[in-house]
Image 1 (cartoon, rainbow, N blue to C red):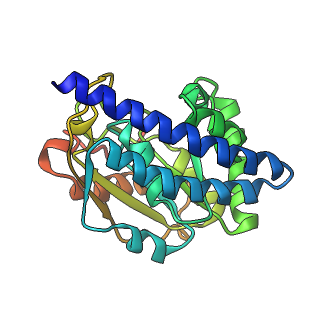
Image 2 (cartoon, helix red, strand yellow; image 1 turned 60 degrees about the horizontal axis):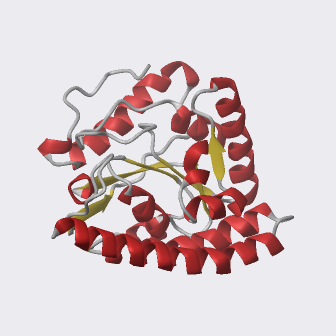
Length: 253
């Protein structure tokens, strides 16, 4: 039965997560004075645990996108967001030295959230625009001063039907502040394996495509909406018809 299979997969996944979190949390505690070191340590955690959880959930990654992402170095990686699996795809694929950006509620996720709290990665309050903007500015300084990259889901929340949603502007402001290229990451099929607000898992294939980097050194604040639309269009075109946005806006509000 699907529910029994899902329960067993969750149990194994939580056990693996608990063991890994204990080990890496000790390391993060020892590295509390050094935020960049904690970020890099937790990148190693992500590479190990992300791939393991994908295997436990029955997620088969088509091809091998990891070398393509690793070869690009520091960048702002932006991906579509349709499933809880996206977190594990992101932490597995993000190159060493990549700072994650997540909602503040991530700390309530079992085990993973508690490690995230001490990891050095960024949490933002989506309900407090002023606080979120200041947090992004701090992250831009951290990234710029230490040669880091950023991984962010620009839609801000998961899509319920798998279709690409309108992008928020946070990633674009980070691009302006850091000058890093934007690398779209297209994730196809994750919403069919672990759907939003669903307990059941449906093992299957996920295709992850690392698209060519989009330079941002010429971006200007007064044309930011056009740049956002360009990135969204590139990601939209890489997705299958069933996941493409019904309308890609010319400007993002």
